[in-house]
Amino acid sequence: MAGILAPGLGVLAHLERLETQVSRSRKQSEELQSAQAQEGALGTKIHKLRHLRDELRAAVWHRRGNVKACIANVEPNRTVEVNEQEALEEKLENVKAVLQAYHFTGLSGKLTSRGVCVCINTAFEGNLLDSYFVDLVIQKPLRIHHHSVPVFIPLEEIAAKYLQTNIQHFLFSLCEYLNAYSGRKYQADRLQSDFAALLTGPLQRNPLCNLLSFTYKLDPGGQSFPFCARLVYKDLTATLPTDVTVTCQGGEALSTSWEEQRASHETLFCTKPLHQVFASFARREKLMSLVS
Image 1 (cartoon, helix red, strand yellow):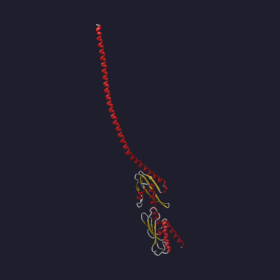
Image 2: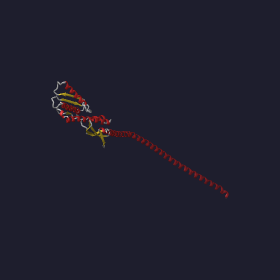
Image 3: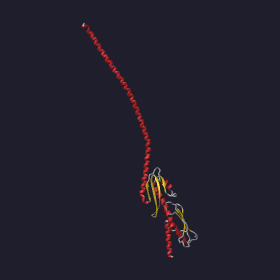
Image 4: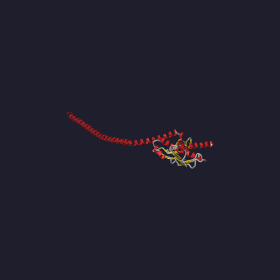
């Protein structure tokens, strides 16, 4: 009996081993399929991630390009603004330097919230005369906010010529005009106040004091003919006339001595301030009266 069962038992054992191998093989196959499925899923995910990476990279490069373009557009404007500000600051410093350097020549000033207010003190022969101010706004373009310059001084012409390009030249040129005007006015005032006795009529002058006419006699109590003088100052920055005409009323047939005297008067008026000429006339008449 035992000899018959032995082979059966061997077959069963063999079947069990086969089932175990099949089960193991099936399990390995399932694990392989699971691994392959997972690998496929991972591959798909990797593909999607790579695609997303490429899209993000493209977006980054696109934005970077836009930023560069914006910077390229903004930088020139910013550079212009910076350059303009630096230029205005330089002009302000230049004005301050001019005022400091020429404080004792009649130019002075003070800083304001808008820029600087320049004061021009005029003088003639050491005599302090009128003062004028010009309130400058330091911006682009430079402009005059307010001033006390007389209307007959060509301020607008001077500003148009020099204000934007050379502030120092603008101030000096304006000083020349104002000093010359004050000097001419001072001479005319002195003639009227100090030598009225030598005048035979009113002194006629225009507001700019660049055209004067008057009559005078060197011996007010005598019988001599009065002289008529006409002084023209074509150069508005000068205190001496450019054209002088002296005639003698009622003396169509004057002697040579009177003609020489008339010509000498013209020379004096061209070369000396008006009140100095009449001061010399007054000294001469005083000397003549002492002699006689």
